[in-house]
Picture (cartoon, helix red, strand yellow):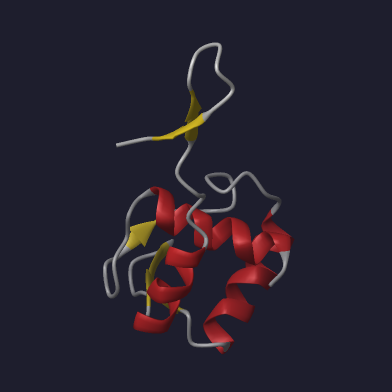
Length: 91
């Protein structure tokens, strides 16, 4: 997966878009130039991960795309206990 494709999938994750839920966005929203955005989006659509919807700038994830977007989610932050250097899981 390219960096541009990953950025788009992370964008869907950031807004917690589920399968078949439309999300309106453009290259500026993903902080990338139009050409890489267009190429990445076309690649994701060819791989049946993203669907271009009828309204302009509307996209949705397929079930496979949604599952892949879940893997793009960053791990939960780990908090350090003060002074001890131990790791404490966030609850």
